[in-house]
Image (cartoon, rainbow, N blue to C red; front, side, top):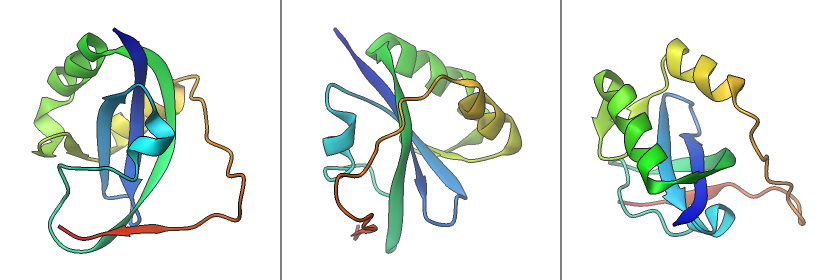
Length: 102
């Protein structure tokens, strides 16, 4: 099924989540595999993709995996994300940081 592969970072940009969703903008409100403790999450952007592409990226960046779909946002992963033609969400209201608790 086609949807989007999205990338979201923690506020301190130490970690990035690589996920798949049909509705990536709404998905940031529904994260289930959260990192421990409180932190803010920001959706960097998303690209058209499939669950297979998401799984391939998880495999490709496995050495950086922290937990579940969370990866250390190391320079090689930052470069990869920067090279993508991301669809960057444009807020329709003033930006708001979402704080989630595990």
